[in-house]
Image (tube, rainbow, N blue to C red; front, side, top):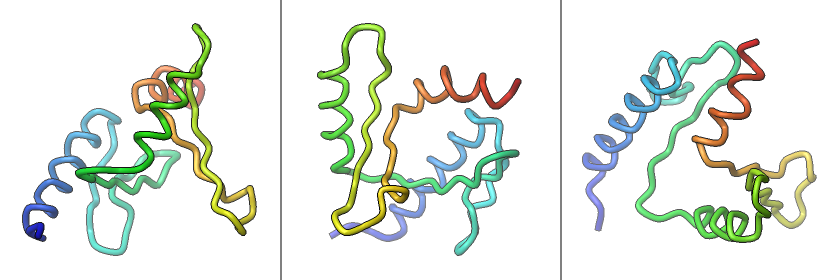
Length: 102
């Protein structure tokens, strides 16, 4: 059984690290956004295991050289507009951040 206090501590450490890395302000109050960014409202999660990792690894294995791997997850019965996009943070920083900071 996991300890809720350890989970909260891990979450706070993750929020602090990402706030510093993304030049955001950590808000981190229950019920609100975790990180305040000029463009994004960022919710931060930290898991011991996450199914999205396997999906992303498959996208990386299948990506031809020179292409950025991206995984899109669709939930059956949901509108495709609600699909989730998974991308490595390092790739997001290299490709998306330069576009939005111009």
